[in-house]
Image (spheres, protein in one colour):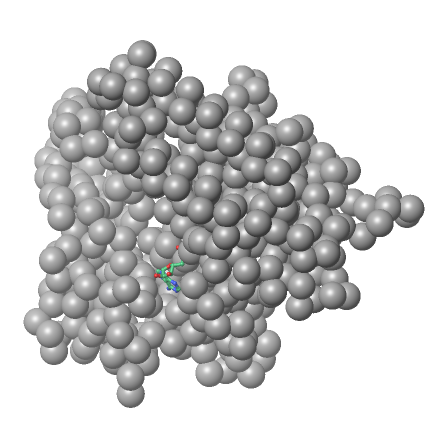
Length: 463
Ligand SMILES: Nc1ncnc2c1ncn2[C@@H]1O[C@H](COP(=O)(O)OP(=O)(O)O)[C@@H](O)[C@H]1O
Ligand SMILES: N[C@@H](CC(=O)OP(=O)(O)O)C(=O)O
């Protein structure tokens, strides 16, 4: 069972979640917890501010907020003295790391990963202590202690195979062992080569949960959030969203990749690799809601009525239009285009080709900062010119609207979507339905992006 930051945001939420966990007396779930509330964001802010700090870093507001939240929570829950001491030690170490950043006037990716790790390391200790106070046998587990092994991208480590055997060994109860609830840190691992603390990328606790599910051969991983499941669109953008009873892993992966914050892009992979593991998205604020089951295939009945699952928007998208009359249609044109992209280390999101041009959208996460993006794009355009691929135009400020649904009925999906967009006078600049069987992508101007999502959502979910 995984509980995200919003589910363990304060003492009251911790009490609620503990009741959810204890309502499964016959089970001894493995719990995966994220940092409390907005602690991860506060830790990142503390790192940035520490770089410019003059006086002692402990005065920095994000650090004060972190200390206040965890001390107040321990006070309210009556945390035992040993755990209190452990958390105080972590808070002290956190301040030392920030002091180091202030002295060095620099915060590296490796340091940021270490910085954010304090969130999950504290939340799991406090939660385990509270469960113990309710009479449950519990054990707090740090995945950075010889359990989750990742590649050495400090803030986006990929899970390495060694993780599965280590996790199985660490969490499997022996024949004589007393049943115990393990409270495991989400989001964290350790780089195989550097041995440095690494994170699995923002939202990575979902991935921690599915990795554990696969390692232990579980039937179900429950991901508890603050919504009734995977919804038909982002509830912060669209009114009247409805929870989906079922999603395939592929739909969930496309949703996450194309911008739905609700699931981590890589979190479905371990579940997809396990023949009988499903993921259930539940709401810790509304435990009666059935939630969304994410599994391999829809059953027949489901499939018959299945049209559109969800609409998701990815903003801040840059598009390249590559026009060449000389090379189009000739063997190797596309290969040349993609080799230029690869040599610049820029990943492509969506492609649409026409008789005389290729349009590519660039994954915004690969364009970290405005000036880097500008330099990077200028070099990219220059490389295309040098390759003699002819004219390239760059345009930014687009949104990709992805329609995750039954692409076998894409005529109906497209016809109704274009009608909805037309009635709002929203212009579609590119359409792409890649190899994916579940995703049709439309490119629109970013300032019309949310209106586009609302118009399509109203067409399919408000009738
Ligand atoms: N299609 C969607 N379905 C459900 N939630 C969505 C969707 N798109 C965006 N969200 C947002 O994702 C949030 C849940 O994801 P997240 O913040 O990662 O939860 P947690 O921190 O509890 O794991 C919701 O509060 C919601 O605002
Ligand atoms: N705390 C980490 C990991 C995570 O998955 O958080 P959440 O479950 O709140 O999305 C983050 O904020 O990215």
